[in-house]
Image 1 (tube, rainbow, N blue to C red):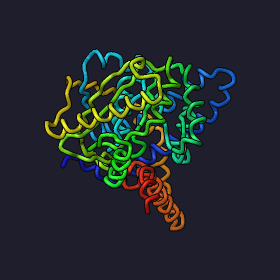
Image 2: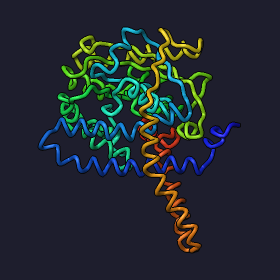
Image 3: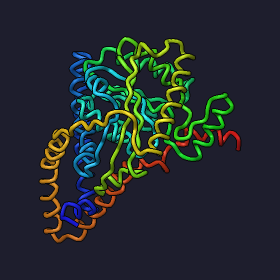
Image 4: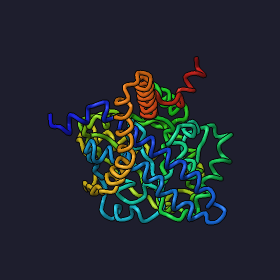
Length: 376
C-alpha cells in the first residue's frame, strides 16, 4: 500500500477533510446571508455571486469523487447531444438507486460548467440540514413536503421564479420520489398493478405531479429534458464513506436528450410520456445487466482542475491555524484544555458522520412506504 492509499484510510485525514468542508461551508453560508442585501438592488448579481459561492462548497464533494477516489464517469450518448451540455437550461431525470447518484450528477454538472447553478426539487427536511439545506435556500431551491395538496402552490411559484435565471441551470428531478429499496419497490409495483401500468424491475413507479408541473412551469425557459440512467461496473453499490476511503468506482451514464417541445403539454399525456420513459429506462438497465454496457458512444469528459484547486485553497487557509492551535493545546500541558479539545473532536466527528448519513439508503425517508403503513 502506497503512502497516499494509506492516508486515504486514516480517520484523522477524514476528520481534517470534514473540518475543511464544514468550516468553509459555514463561512460560505454567512457570506450568502450577507448577499441578501443585494437582492433588492440587483437580483441577478445576487444570483451570480451565490452560484459561485455554492460552487466553492459543492466542488469539494466533487473533488472527493474525481481526485480523491479517482472514480471514472463515462457518458453513453452521442456527440451531438453532448454538444448541448452547459449551453442551455435543462431538466435532468435521474434514477435514484445509489447513495452517490447525486454526486455523479454533480460531477457532470461541474465538467460542463453548471455545478453552481444546478437546481433540485428537494424534500423540505433537508432545509434544516446545515450547509446543504442552508446553501440550497440561498440558491432558491424549491423545497416540498411531498404532499401535493400542500406543495403545488409552493412548487409552481418556485419554478416560475427561475424563469429569468441568468446562468444556464440543470434542474434535477428524482421522479421516483425516494431511493430504491426492495420494500419500496414491492409496494410501488402493487400500486402500478392497481393502475394497470407495466411493472418495472429496476425502478420505482415515477411520481408524475412534480414532473408535469416542472414541464408546465418551465416551458419557455428550459430547452430540453435530459434522461440519465446510471449504473456502476462490476455490480458495485458505492457509498460516500467508500469515496472518503478512496475506493475507486466506474460510473456509466446513458444520456438521452428530448427537446421540451416534444413533451406533451397536456398533463395526462405528459404523465403517460413519463411512464413510457421509465419503461425505457428499465430496458436500459436490463441491457446493462446483461451486457455490462449502455447503448451509445462512450464519452469521457475530462475532469477539470478547479475542484482540486478550490479544496487546496480552503485547506491552506483553514488547516494552518488549526494545526497551530492543536500544537498549542498539547504544549500547554493542561489536562482540562486537552480533554475539552478531544471532546470537541469527538463532537465534530459525530457531526460529520451525521452529514454523511444523509446520503445512506438505509437511513432514507419513509416516503414510498406509506402505502404499506396504510395497509397495516
